[in-house]
Image 1 (cartoon, rainbow, N blue to C red):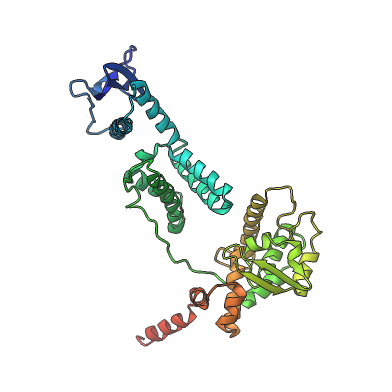
Image 2: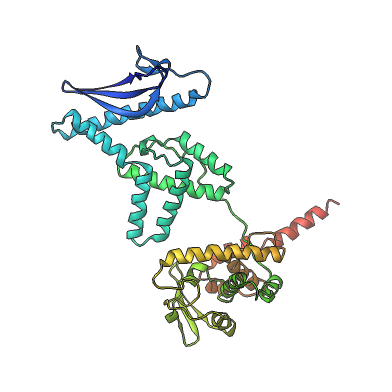
Length: 401
């Protein structure tokens, strides 16, 4: 028989907060388990062995949170005790306390997500590992560096996190991205029987809002190409990478970054899309070569001046280059009075939009973009061109005049 009692030890110094500890009794042996919770004598009901929650004031929320954490701690001790009993082997009170301390140190959200990210990286899933680290970094800032045991995560905490994200000015899709990664990590812990599912994500947003894809018309592409940026090498480089993506049928930046010199052979560029693994072949043109010739040959095995050394971390180099290019493109957009966020991905949208405007069949556009099906391309093009719907709406509205 094991008993767990919540105890309060007042401070010997007048006016100073005392501490909460747990008294665990097993086979007539009594041990104490320390906690990080502190409160004043006026906040403790010794007869009922419980906290006194004030009706108002700044301490109210603190005491409420402390009471909930104590409840969770006692439940955790009881569950671990049952686990030891089920094993059918004898155990001591020290074994129970040791198991508890191991659990609260090992099975925290920060540790769980770090372990998961490391495992993903070892499996060759570097991009997924980065999404876990990104979500963890965000949640760590929300918690101000304070870790949390997995079984303490509840709906209230996640709703508070979502509110915090909104106050940071993040878009619904970014908020959903962080929530979905945290949910995946939490559910993994549930599957591993580390924690029982408390459904903490039931009230937070985990959907995906449809976002408008931006494309530059050919008239703007021509102005963009003709800009004199000779005195601004950083902007010139960003423009070159954007135009090269456009020339390469809207090739995504990650695919551009990882192109190898050996991929260019006999006037054709052959590569596989990172996203789908589909093999694509593109004829190498004089416009493409003109951009490549502007930059000295680097010592790395990579074709383009994005990952410039074989000794650096390729993924970090690609990400840093992408960040810097997009920042430069924003400056160019201001020069052209473009009132939307100009990024490398706009080059892909622009190529698809230009192909559609020129009457190129969907089947050809689909092949050029590396889509697996024409259905995907039709959905993609529909999100780019709303002019037909806009014209229909104008006709309807004009009929009211």
